Amino acid sequence: MNKENRIISVRDMEVKFQVRGNFLTAIRTVDLDVYDQEILAIVGESGSGKSVITKTFTGMLEANGWVSNGSIVYRPTQESIDDQGAYFKDPIDIVNLQSPLISKDVIKNVTKINNEKIKDLFKEIKHLYKLNPKYKENREKQELKKLRLENKIESEHNDLVLLRTKQELQDLTEELNSDLLNDNEISVIKENNKNKQSQLLEELNKQLNQLQENIGFSGNNRTANKIIKLELKIKAAEETIKIINDNSLRDELIKSKLEDILKLEIDINKVKPLNMKNRHQVSKITSMIEKFIENNVEWNEVEKQFILDYFYSKDHLKRFEKELRDICLSVIETKTLDKDHFHNILIDWKRIKNSDLVNKVKALKEIRQLRGKTISTIFQDPMTSLNPLLPVGFQITEVLRKQVGLSRSEAKAEAIELLRKVGIPNPEKRYKDIPGRYSGGMRQRVVIAIALASRPKILICDEPTTALDVTIQAQILDLIKELQEEYKFSVVFITHDLGVVAKIADRVAVMYAGQIVEVGTTKEIFEDSKHPYTWALLSSLPQLGKKGDDLFSIEGTPPSLFNEIIGDAFAPRNKFALELDYIKQPPMFKVSETHFAKTWLLDPRSPKVKKPNVLNNLRKTIKESEKVG
Image 1 (tube, rainbow, N blue to C red):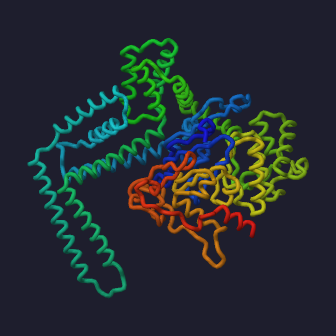
Image 2 (image 1 turned 30 degrees about the horizontal axis):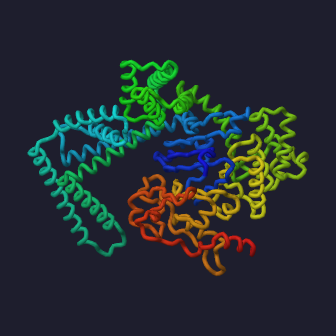
Image 3 (image 1 turned 90 degrees about the vertical axis):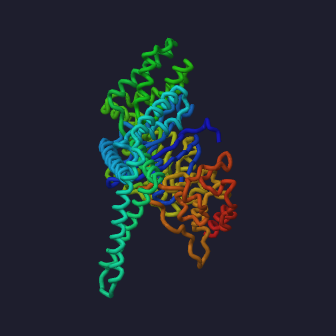
């Protein structure tokens, strides 16, 4: 598909929610494009993240949620740019637009919880060094700094920054080496610790043997519980002895904990806004770049040092800071810069440069322009979308007056016309009826009319037919298709019903456990799908059921999104899973220009696996079953 026609581009998006003192990662590393005037269906089981993705488009996440990584770029079409009523004329990153609206409670809790976890991890590292020492004094924070520098060197491409980083790493390494204990001191401490743990292990084994010998026929499980606790203590003592004996095991455990600390620090940095001192410094840097563009005069040494010191002094840079840093380095090294890129950075910077209160007021104003006029949503239950006490006509005219700026009489005439377009009979008479006088299908038509009132560029349909019977479902789907062709908007259709997808969608994105695992045209997904999860979803279609046989169902349950997921999230439920699926997350493999799938089965080295036979000639089977029905 033509990249020029992209209207929404999602890159490396991650969404988190704070739930009961912990963090749930609802969306993980999602890349997705929505093209102008297409119908994109997002499918998957309940809880896969379908609705969460689209809520980020309009800033409608719950108060305890936030976009913790990535970007969502909205690109206005030429028609929108030429439209005097359109608010957004340039590409915008919707994530940056929403960042001032992150709840203060979320920022406070993320900072508090992560700092407590960091404190606990440092205690665990100190305990490991106490068992198997290395330095004369505590050097955990210096080792953390060393790991930061090593990671920076791995990801850095600029020679100027690399030189400075390598020198700092060398100095720090020399400092740590000078503080190492000698071998004799280490041997004495390790021997003492080993003796203590061996004595403890011996005592625990004695207690365990005594309990096992005294197992009788009493009607309780107290002895069994004691045995379980002792076995856990014995296992912990054995692991401790291994750590005392094995320096490489100690170093491996410590590095893992330091990496966890870095992740927690990055999460804090992502959610916290810049302090006023940093905002002042960034404002100064952007002014210097603007002067360079205007006068083309090279910065002096003091100015260069100020810029380098700002970016280098920070342990973790925000995404826009990294982009600004690259612009500055380009000016310093080549005396050139990408003006369009800098212009986009300035647009994002103006949204967060002021005080938190001013930024929030501005963000709320822009979000109102984004919702309805640019991106509109149809929700699945029309009764909760409509105010049951107000006439449907008033609810439509309210949108037209506030968003489009029509007068009362103009808004009424337009509302009646919208009701007619969505198939409400006698709209002039039904205009004053409250929602309770409409049937479920008619209420959903009213919701569609409200969603289309501001002529949005993108329409999100969040399972709009779930609450309706089969006959009305077909009518609503046909209506959305007709209106899309008439008004030329893009549609993002969220559903778990693949039968609906076959009728309405141009492309399909399949989601599982917060990730997109396959994306392609509707024909590619139904006729040549590649991911085992897509096969499982398609096999679950009721149209494939045979009389007397049980319908196919996917065994097991999705993974907990509170925990870090290692490897392919679908592996435990996948009968085609490879050993690698449990260890390493698969990349997104390219099948065709429009078809991609996230499965190791597409790696040339993997064994050849065929999709289930029931999926052969799938679309033909669906059509035939519908004729029978």
